[in-house]
Length: 411
Image (tube, rainbow, N blue to C red; front, side, top):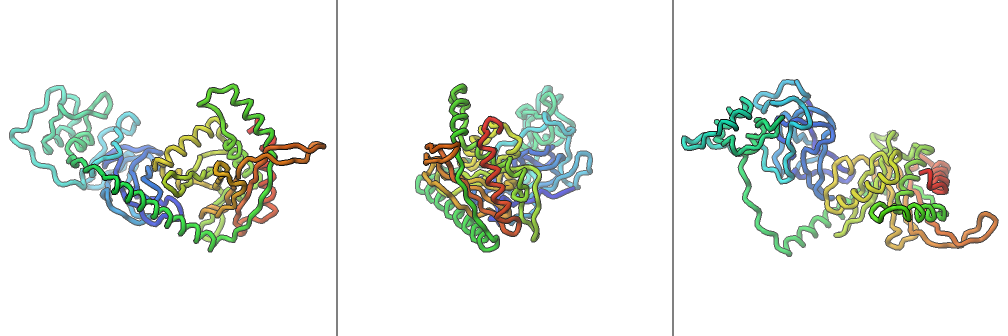
């Protein structure tokens, strides 16, 4: 048995509000399943589970704000005895046997008001409905006064499970009144103010606790620009690449040469990470920003990176990111080139130990290859934690990015 905790979705998060459960007590779960939604200053986040098993018991009701680390539910392995009073799993663990609840799921049955007893006038279920319901589902339906003919089964071959009856018996919340424009504006303003406060707290902590040092270099991108133009000429518009994916991939690959920058600072020491999860800084339309992880950046193809970048940007601006995408970043890349900024010197986002900045691609005189040319160039900067590395190693890292970008076809 283990607890499912309110996650820490970044160093700036102290508490979260449970919005909804996507699974109920008795439901089977697999690693990566979305089990709950949590409201934070960064939006409503889909929270994943990282084990296989069963939801044994729900401990926190939607609408409650609780500190990071608070147990939200109790999980058990398949075959492990259920907690007394907790619904038992009726079907073996298999992906086709559990239905996922909508994001607006009602309060779990064990937290809801007791269901009314069966009325003498309650409709009798049809023979077909009874035949496709499990024994415990039939028993629960009699106790809750649920007509099995109105229940959709989510078990194998449409079998009605106990969880299906629980869902059918759960009270339906009345529709919320429409929100006025003034209320929506106030809500947006409140969320933006909370986001600004949490960002300010994290950045103040970063500058106070992390001994930053900064390096910068200018990189010739003429090979990258030429290669992308040639590559995109052969692609439909929706599959074209942006120069930013080359910068992300080069950053991830450069960390193989300077691995101490792919790390976090925890418990007064550095913890190196094997996988490279580059955090992409995404500006939000209403203001503020969020950093979302592109998992396994170093092993993705450029096409997969492009797809992932588009997906993260859309979901980040809609406030629909997953908890792992907010907590797994091992280094952050920020780019303000589309805002006309030629260089950016960022603040490290704890517990990470480095941040890479890219500016606008501009044309500049460039001496090289025995001549003077006009070349597209970009300024790359590094903010690094002096407890973990030094200027020499940081310089090698920026040099590796430069070298990798001179052979874009190999990224």
